[in-house]
Image 1 (tube, rainbow, N blue to C red):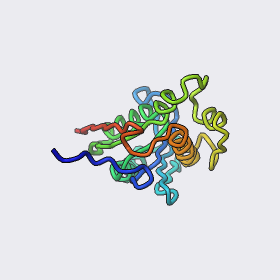
Image 2 (cartoon, rainbow, N blue to C red; image 1 turned 135 degrees about the horizontal axis):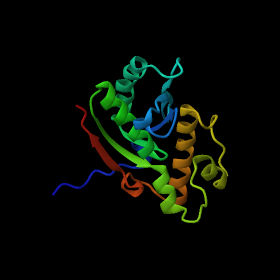
Image 3 (cartoon, rainbow, N blue to C red; image 1 turned 135 degrees about the vertical axis):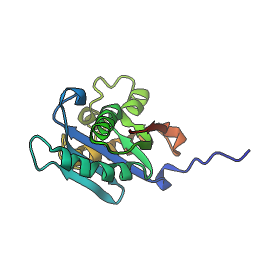
Image 4 (cartoon, helix red, strand yellow; image 1 turned 45 degrees about the horizontal axis):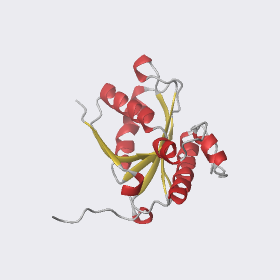
Length: 176
């Protein structure tokens, strides 16, 4: 049996991802207004809808770009179930293909490592760890940068060194 491939975190291809939306439920009319992906080199995708509300054609044009970034390596995000719900809902609605992504949710990681944190909101966790965000929170780029900071702080605090240490998961969603 071949040994399992478990690269060191510092050598892994990691992307930090966030969305901003008009509300909490895509099935009740909320739409994606911002998308961001950053990595160790910097911002790779920064899209803000030029229209309010966002137009379907603009979102449909950006979703394949977003999916391509998300499928490249391991995606790190905070409360990814929220973001993935929007991505898959909009992809289904707009006829954009599927998604096959490996990911780590810093919300779950923080809940495991910081059992008495009180609040697990991104800004509150950064404050608790004495870390300042790299940008304005509640923007896709700002939250993706803040998630990058939080992830590395959690890794240091927990002594994680490999992908398996941070419990990488996989989500496959097949569109129409």
